[in-house]
Image (cartoon, rainbow, N blue to C red; front, side, top):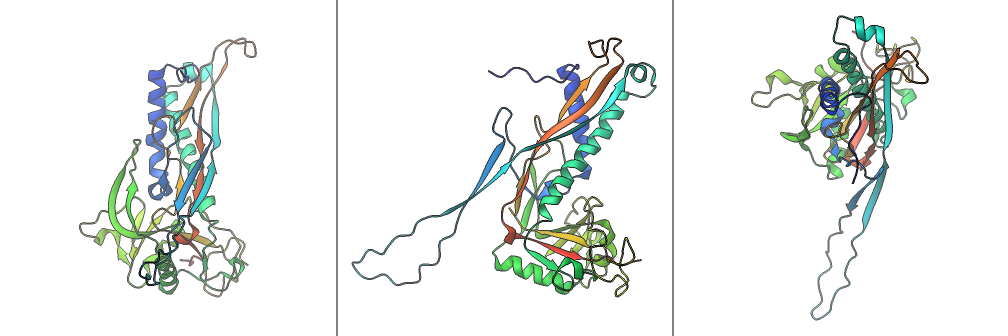
Length: 331
């Protein structure tokens, strides 16, 4: 039988408080988590998780012959395995700070660490998703050509491609709360991108501002929709700096003045990717070491507050998502 979970030098009651602070501080920064196929992995379990898809059968269009048994079909499957990786960090805590600082140190430090944990996990997932092989470019045929903003024509190509692959619209998202659960949303494809692209998206013909949705509640970070696609923005979704073409052709953002910055827009359909949610028991484990005497620290002058988590992200079907690489207009 497994022993109790330990949290350094703090009691389980205090540890629960710290974990709650980490999650509540982290949630507003997490957009990708809303749209993943979430697979929590229990403690004391494996580091790997396998996702299985049973493949569709082709239509049976050959007429049956009377009295003749037709050859049957065999069900085939596709397995995709992801391996959990551990991430974490800590900050030092001295006895002087703990004894003399007027602010509640535990709360302040865990709040900062919570933001770091959220940013770390979001970036790890973002790097996986932007590597999707189903790529579209605003112009040209490679990233080095890109110097043009997003357009309705490009979005139409992407949506048509998703529908050709029988990609289903997203109808539910993971809730933005420390507890694990989902909530229903209006069926749509979802696009995630950097805040620098906001005005290019707003200038697309047919754009509907999120405040004009009527009875449909906007999602966190959502600015509006164009056709079948709802756009959500976060400055976490960083561009490839100076990776594109001539920025002067369309007056777009460039970090070096010579090559356009290239911004990925991740278009998602239902069940396109999966990951371990940053929610629930043991999602983030706080580690608090109070300053106390030890062999390496005889006067008990040093302690620490930290966090760690086991995470993974994996694309389940490249055809059910797409990445458009575009430039961002200078304002």
